[in-house]
Length: 196
Ligand code: MN3
Image (cartoon, rainbow, N blue to C red; front, side, top):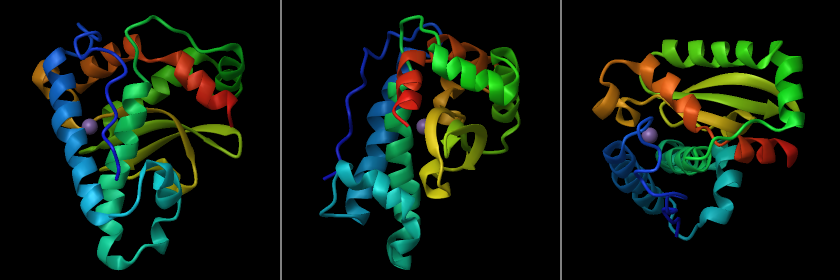
């Protein structure tokens, strides 16, 4: 069985940046539905196999490949998303900051590029800071496609589906993205980077 992980903090703890009701519906309904549908598509599997499955999506039979891409991707992306948020004020550690500097010039430029990719992504999808062979880059994926399927390791992902922000921000996606920076868990992102 794949299991819906608990939120690592109370659903109201990211206020006012991400509102309580959005967190509850996003986790308890949307993420739960990905897990339920993934269990239907891939019975007899569990979370320890998810990354391997997403990295090797092409090996699955045509009959379940799309289901696993959508719901397996949805489960993995959201699990990562909750862990990448924190009510605490955190900053990137030195090693990550220096890699961001050598890839993007400086942190502000990275932030602007990420912001611009997230603002301009058409429709539903995600924007990612990923590592590929130790090199950082930005990546946009449609729907619930996982960076793992493209051979990249996700370090930080931003959900820009309307369900992630519409209750509070309506059509103002840019305001949601501005607010989201305040609750990024840089400790977690840094530790993911240092474990590469
Ligand atoms: Mn979502």
